[in-house]
Image 1 (cartoon, one colour):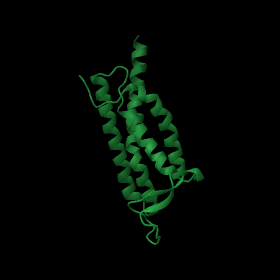
Image 2 (cartoon, one colour; image 1 turned 90 degrees about the horizontal axis):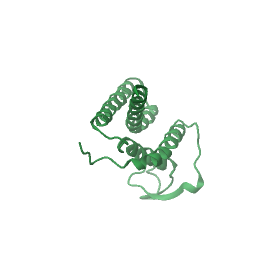
Image 3 (cartoon, one colour; image 1 turned 30 degrees about the vertical axis):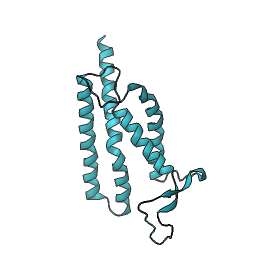
Image 4 (cartoon, rainbow, N blue to C red; image 1 turned 135 degrees about the horizontal axis):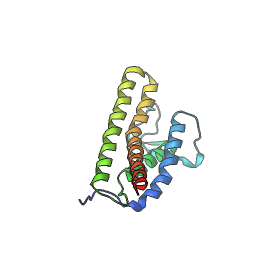
Length: 158
């Protein structure tokens, strides 16, 4: 079965190098365990929407780009990791990918339901920020865990 939507396998190493630090730093930054905002990342950027309506800056605002860089790192590297070919791409790998996507969706929406019932105020917005990335992160982790289990199973049978 020929699958055309998958990315080349050679991108995976780069994606892991970006994904792991982006997720760790993104979580630490969001929960304010780290509060760094490097001066080198302060820029005037175009903002279609801005939460500071009292400013006269218009569409151009001063912003530190750390959280945008981390978010882009998670999304791009996560998509590469989730949708790159494996060394032996076949129907079973496609099935594992599909199952991982389904399970990550179930888990993500389970957390959303819990948040809707038990998380309120500004904390809910923080939780929703995690929810934006949680589905992709879970998909990558579940899929690669299933691949890991498959590889261990085939090694033990040899």
